[in-house]
Image (tube, rainbow, N blue to C red; front, side):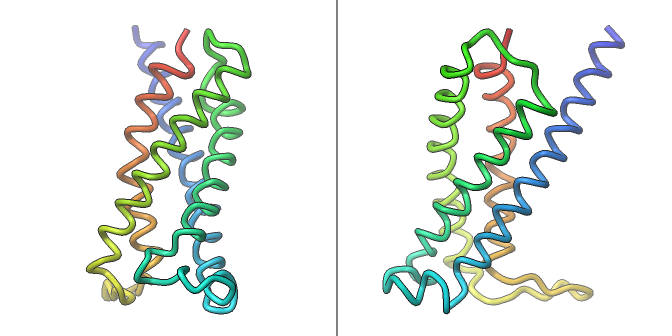
Length: 152
């Protein structure tokens, strides 16, 4: 029983670390791609009003792939599924949560559209909204990954 609790705590800690690393990758790419001289320069629809759709999709996709590799190498043990089915389930879940994340980002970005000053630090609107979306979606991801994708 105690060993099971320790294993579960370790898994949650590793999931958190993997999530933070994936979030850093995702947020950094989002910030880079949404710069005026990158995707908004190439596509007129890529702007604040539309919640930066391409930047969001590409950055979230990168976060998903990095999270998959962190998950299979550091967090979860292989489940009962074949590698192909496991990856397919992971991608399906990720696509669903990607749209959920985009919707949450768009919701927050509809009223947080300037950098926010927290006294000792100022966080850009894109980084703050993306971070909140990642945080909200990550708990859903953990439960589904543990119970369905990587279950034994």
